[in-house]
Each structure stands twice: as C-alpha cells, then as structure tokens.
Image (cartoon, rainbow, N blue to C red; front, side, top):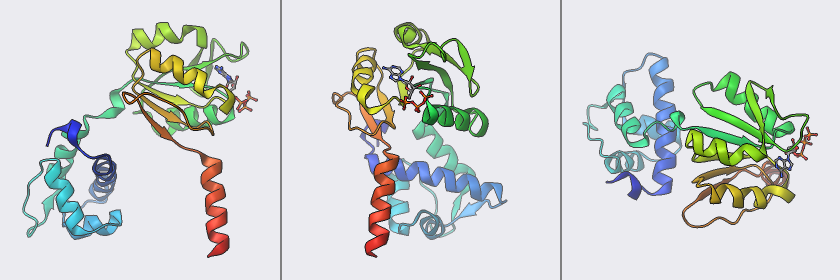
Length: 208
Ligand code: ATP
C-alpha cells in the first residue's frame, strides 16, 4: 500500500510498534511473534499481522519476525519524521517545558526555532533553543522549509497564529492551546488539551 493511503490508525499503531520493537531490541531480543507484539501494544495478533501487511512487511508469522527487518520496513514507511524541521510558537511555561523535553530528552527531534512576541524572550536561547520574534516567522519557515509546528500560545491567540502558519504552508500542527482550531483539509492538526484530558480522567475515575 502506498504511504499516503495508510489509514491514520495504522500509522499510529505502526509508530507504537516501532517504539516497542526498539525497546525489545535494547533488551537483547532479536525475534518477535505477532502475539508478543500485540500483548505489548494492547491489541490482537491478527491486528498486528494486518498492519504489517499494510506496510508491506512479510515475514514468517509461524517462526516469528526478525526485529531488525521489521524495524527497517517500518522506518522505510514512516520516513523518519525526526529529520523534519519543527518550530514552536509561544515560549511560556508550557512552551519552555516542551522545549526542554525535546532539547535534553529527545535531541533527535529537530526544533529549529522558537517564537514569541514578548521582547524579553526574543533573541535569547531558551531551554536550548533560539527564540525569535514572531515577525521573523515568515522568513524562518521559508528558509528552513518548515512543515511542522507546535503551538503553545494562549487560547485567545491560537487561531490567529494558526491562520498565519497555514498561509505559510505549514502542514501539521501539534496544538497545546486549549481551543479547537479551524484548519483547511490540507493541514492536519493534533490537539493535546492537557486540562481537558485531566478533567475527563478525574470524572471517569470518580464514577468508576
Ligand atoms: P509567561 O508568564 O512566561 O508569559 P505563561 O505560560 O503564563 O508564561 P501564556 O499567557 O500562556 O504565558 O502565553 C504563552 C506564551 O505565548 C508567552 O510566552 C506569550 O508571550 C506567548 N504569546 C502570547 N500571544 C502570542 C502571540 N500572538 N504570538 C506569539 N507569542 C505569543
């Protein structure tokens, strides 16, 4: 199947398989059965085999799969997103925490620039990343060929910044601002509303 036709859920599961396989590899394991991967991923062996088929990986399910080969097939499909330049807009408390996490814990993630409108933050290196004025957004997005953005501005400014990002050709937005964003079909927006999810958990665990 062509990469563009992979269903979103398959992509999500494949990313999870990759992470699990890397963990297994680190612990010295070289082979894995679909039922083992399924147990770790919290789904079924049939689902794992169907996903592997969709990404074009064939192995011998009876003998188990060679982890190295499976990782190679997955990486060929996912096309290593870590090399893509990413920007972050809004270097407040959450933005800083995210920058620190990527700089110090996930250095393979390529955050090329951070942006803020606060003059006290502009032209400084914050949590390992240079912070630019939002006036420089156009220039840097074009120069670095940026397609992915992380949004950590307050809700009241999130749509306005999003519209600008869309206009500049950003294709994917990871939105931490607690407000749903309107984007055209050509742009994918993933919403990570921490407070909403926490409230949901608080409610669900209360009624359990
Ligand atoms: P701080 O007190 O350091 O500003 P905060 O997390 O309380 O942190 P928020 O009000 O949530 O701040 O804003 C997050 C960040 O987004 C801040 O650094 C703010 O300057 C920045 N910001 C707000 N509006 C915009 C905008 N339109 N463009 C760029 N950055 C913005």
